[in-house]
Image (cartoon, rainbow over all chains, first blue to last red; front, side, top):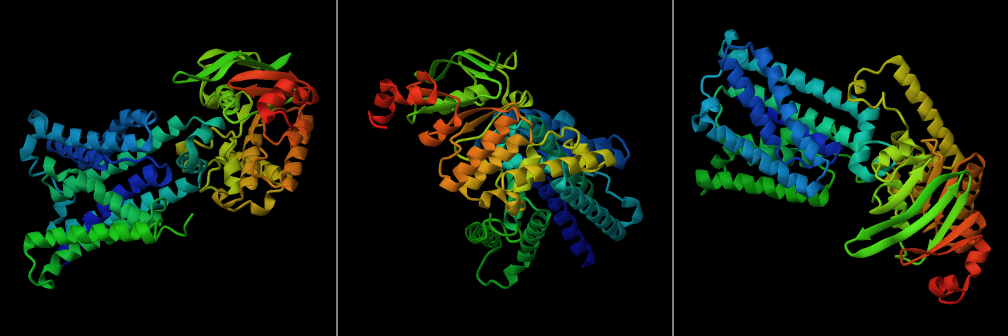
Length: 293
Length: 253
């Protein structure tokens, strides 16, 4: 039971990390990134492949974050020329391109068969203990990112991100070049997603391309939007709530009579969809996003 | 010597010439009024001067530099700033933060310095905050200092925009309809502030439909019609010009 709770906790914290990254990009700066999973995948594969080459895990994790961040540079530069809706399409397409590239370039990524047998984080400490250790490390990192986000939001840099989110052209008329700030925050959010990917790879220990479908991106979005984008509180609570629901509702099958296994899976998604509609209708700033603007 | 020099500037939208070969000069400390019917090309001229919609033809020089193709933020660095016809406040920032976002603080605004604030950066930030408070007092906005700017009235938003550009210590301010939707008391107040700032050495170009206020404020006036300059000169002479009355006011003042 502890092991199971620990596993759910780890996955939930990985989603929190993704949501915190997206919160910087969308919550503060209003950059519509529909390609979160691409940076998650690049982080997972970078760390996975390097660890199989025998690199020490801390180095693999760092490189996963750095490479995912660097990959965001060209997309970030592109985003300077695009309006919100076009950026959404470009990033969504980009994330599918990343997934298909991973699937096709088997010489590097082992293609559809994926990468089995990745070294698990803290494996030396024994099965149960290593999960607790991963959970603790993740909790500390998520805590640090939360602290960093609050700090950033209150800094002059964060003030400009919010100004960009409100009215980019007006900011540029005031002598600021929004381009630099947008690229930086895009890379920062992507690096967090890359780091989340490394945690995922070295917890699950087996990654395949079909784990990195756009649905992951939309789970992250749902968590952020339902919790309340723009605040740490919103990003964290929304992601945790969504994960608790998705995991907890696995057991609901026992309580809802006359629904098959497959039917139940669809019912879960329908419930999430309904919740999202209700939240956007009645709490447009999210459940924990504070008062309406 | 002119501070701002606009030579034969045109701006096209498809085949439509929104601004058609306009030339003008602005001297130091001068207030130039621009009037004209809706669609005459006034705001587009501002966008060409400030850089939001660069000129398709012609040349614009400011303080001796060719700025025709310069991005807006670099024009602002030279001291050429603008406000917008429809207020473009940063609605999720407070009034004070709106001014702070405009302050020149390139060191403090670096990502790395969000986490490592040195003493000198904190001091600089505090100086800027004090400067912003001074401007808010000057504009009578101190009362709404910590209110999110999105919740202000239209007139107050206009003042916030003025406050923002003042943070840059500009040499020339382009005001796009500063009196639109503003109550008469506040109009007088804005006029008074503009005169004070002009006294401190700032030049203005003001687009406005409120002709009495514009006449009182301007040293010189231009009336635009269909992308061109119809009349130019002393405000009284310009407004009495029969062509202006014909085009702009249908013959009646």
